[in-house]
Length: 267
Ligand code: NAI
Ligand code: 15L
Image 1 (cartoon, rainbow, N blue to C red):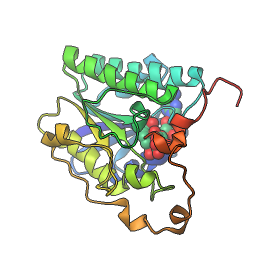
Image 2 (tube, protein in one colour):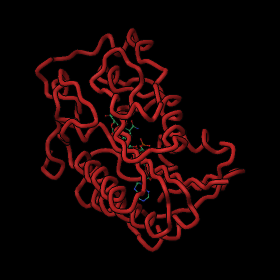
Image 3 (cartoon, rainbow, N blue to C red):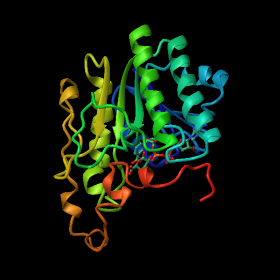
């Protein structure tokens, strides 16, 4: 029996994965969040914890074999909020993992690490980071920390640059960035099961017809998405969306994250 910790379990993706991983054979799931998670379901343990608190994180990670790290600020925010949840938080996670002997971590990174590349640029895992927000910068820091903890301490990591994981695309940009919940779940399982993960950067995106990201450098993991956003292309809201190709939200891959001003400035 191996124990997997799922952070951010009260969030949008956390709730999805909590349900889908709960009865994974041979796995005991420990779910955590700063928010209330309700009572433990059969096959799981519940621990409420602030990522910014290293002492609490050491207790949280004790006895855990592998981690799916979804917890943290998931959109642009003030530097203070990002500092606590995403910078201090991801450091605490990796440091607690090192001290407690965790072997593998899946880090929920984001497409906003590369959001300032234009849409006509094809990217792979070796493309330069071009974060489009302080949030994107914090995910880039998480990826670097994952790299460091693999090179120095042999903690394996997959940094999943998730596109847009929702039940369906919410706008035309998401026809290119959409990741279905089924593909997300299969990806998480695969990176936890593969014999050797090492350090990998994987674009978390379904097999969409419009596509900016290429996963050939992580093909050794053996994950291939099966869904496509194409089935939503004729949704009325998407068909009627008005776009200007020179609007920064359309020019850049990060969409509105690239187009919006600096969070600390008055809007
Ligand atoms: P979410 O915002 O719904 O969930 C994040 C969870 O983290 C929340 O439940 C929140 O309470 C928890 N959290 C925040 N600060 C915390 C702290 N200091 N200590 C402990 N827990 C804390 O986000 P969502 O959509 O579920 O995303 C999950 C992860 O995937 C996030 O890291 C996000 O950045 C990343 N991601 C998600 C994408 C998506 O399309 N949903 C796209 C790209 C990245
Ligand atoms: C993200 O990183 C966010 O967490 C999510 O809420 C979406 O905004 C997504 O990126 C996106 O780019 O669509």
